[in-house]
Every structure is written in structure tokens, then in C-alpha cells.
Picture 1 (cartoon, one colour):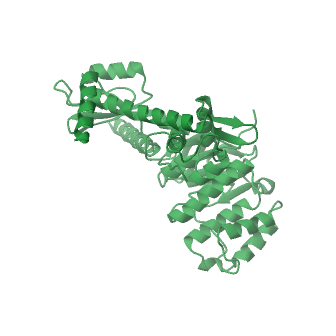
Picture 2 (cartoon, helix red, strand yellow; picture 1 turned 90 degrees about the vertical axis):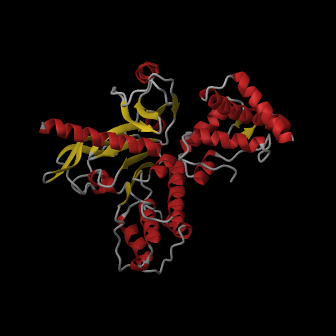
Picture 3 (cartoon, each protein chain N blue to C red; picture 1 turned 60 degrees about the vertical axis):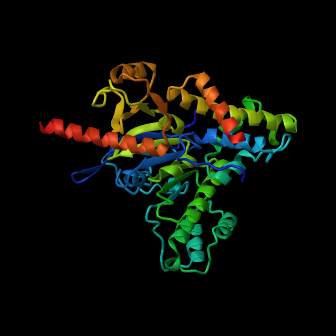
Length: 308
Length: 126
């Protein structure tokens, strides 16, 4: 078994009284595309900043390619491609100057590949960075992350706020890289549809905590919608049962979202509701929304218990 | 491209890929003996994880819809009319199953379902 490309062990990051990341542990296997899902402010960027050695964890540790990224670990950073959420760039430089500058920083900068990407991304070499559109800026940032032939590519909201055409170009490139170079890709996003397409593994983060992690199809299948048709004997409130995430009445039928639905749970629900339900699969987007809402509700309940 | 993916459908992406390939065979857009796109080609085209495409292809191979030729990619099996007939039937059956389960859920008996279909066909014939 090869070593995971990224390991996060009990990572906690505090800023004053705010806990941005809370006891986070996860592993990204080598060569996989890993989708890091969370709302804005869930702690994705903070986690990524620790992976890049830009932020010291309050406690816990991170390893990238088996090494600690802290303390300006230059040889390690040579092997990581990084696109930050703000896509910070030297605004006064021309595109070709940015490339020349980056080429000097990276030992394995592939000049031919950089040139190829420049054409593919339709970037004008003599244009100044400050005159680039958001989309062009994003593509330039991706180019700079790919040209050094990284073993790990870390993308923080790389396609958020961009138009559909640019997003498509970026995703196509990521798939291309993943299938040809076996690069490990860690991609954070709040765009669930994108993660659903490209990722093989996903994690859902809420308020700094990991809610669920694993193979994308298993995470998706871990929640099911169970619909009970209207009936005279139906109860006037949802069942209070372990694993029931949410219950709401739509018209006269009851729609429940149930975690890890099995025969036993289904029988128990049938008895409680008094009708025979049908079960439907949910999209990853719906699953993400349900987990997030559930985590928040738990927080609220915990706070209420504490107050009482 | 002959197939599209919609992540908002509750059907997993690998099943959508399988369905798309089957549909393309049924309607004759890919014929038997023809090579289907490579895993990488289709992954980039659809912007989905290459392993997802690989999973769909392996499953199609297991079901005998395509066969892998070493180092040459995946090809549609069987003779032309066979392959298209087979896929037309598979897809039709899948839709009938969906309809049937809706009918049963609505409380119709299989007999009533049969009758309803027959009536519709006769109505359309008028």
C-alpha cells in the first residue's frame, strides 16, 4: 500500500475564539481526485492553507507526500501545484513575464507544456496581468500550477465565479491531467455538480468539522428519500427515530430523508407511519444539503441542551 | 457527442454513461464492431472522473454489450442488427419496469395495467 498523498490528522485551527477547523482527519490516496465540499466559511480554505504550509495548525498535523509543509519546505512545495481562491498574481507583469518568473522558481518547469497550455487556454503572452479577465486569470493560475509537473494539485475554489465556458476548460484540463499523469488532485468547491463529475472521493465539511467522507457513490447512497403516501392512519408528526435526518409533510404525504437505510429501518418506519413507502435516490447536491442542514441542527440542539 | 451527463438526475453518473452507450447502440449511432471512445477521451469530453468511465465500461463488458481488445479499446459486440435489437429491448424493458412500478404504487393491479396499455394503444390507433 502506497502512502497517501495527503494526510490530515486531528487538525484544529483557531483564530482567537473562532474555531475554523475542528479535529479534522482525512486521507487522500495517491492518484485520486478528492472533492472537498463545504459551504463558504466551512473551513476549506483554512485547511488548504495548512497543506501549503501557509498556516500553522493550532493542534494536529498535516502531511503532503509524507512531509510536513511547514517552515518553508521548499523541496516539497516544488512538487505541489496550488491555485489559491484569490488567484493572487503579480498584476504589473505581462503573462510571459509571469511564466518566466515561475520557470525560475520551479526545478521541473516544463517549458514546452507551458507553451502548449498558453495556446490551449488562449492567453495572450504580451498582455498585462491586471488587464486579464477573471477567466483568463484563473487559467493563468492553473497553467502556473500545472507547468511544474506537480505530483499533487491543490485547487481552492478554482472555478467559482467563472463563466460556464472557462469552467468547462478548467475541468477538461483536470480530467486530462488526472488520466495522463496520475496526479493526485485535491479540489475544494461549493459547486456540488462539479465535484460530482470529477471526484472519486468526497468529504463534506460543515463549520470546520468533517461530516462524512468516502467514495462519492457511497456518500451519495448513504442518504435516501423515503416517501409515505397519504393515509388516514398517518401520524401528524414525523417519526423520531435514529437515522431520520429530516421529515416534512408535502401535501398529505410524508417525505423523510434517512441515513443508511436498511430492511430493519424500513420495517420500523412502515410500522410507525402505517403505510408502505417508496424509496428514491438523491443527487449529490441534495445529499450535501441534507448533511449540512443536519450538522447545523445538531449544533443548535447541542447549544440548547447546554443552555438548559 | 452521443451522450450527456446530468448530475442532477438521481441516477449515478456511471449508470448514465452505461445508459447513454446503450441508447447510442439501440438507435444505430454506434454500430457493432465499432470502437467506442477511449476511457480518457470520454472522461475529458464529459468532464467526469476517468475511473467512473472505466467502471461503466467494465460493467458494459460484463453484460456483454462491449468487449475489450487488448491495447485497442472497447468495441461493440455482436452483429449490427443483434446489438441494436438487444439494446432496444433492454431500454424498452427498463422503461416498462419504471411504468409498472408507478402503476403498482398507484394501486393498479398488473391486469389493470395491461388493460390500460392496451386501451391507450387502441385510442392512439383511432
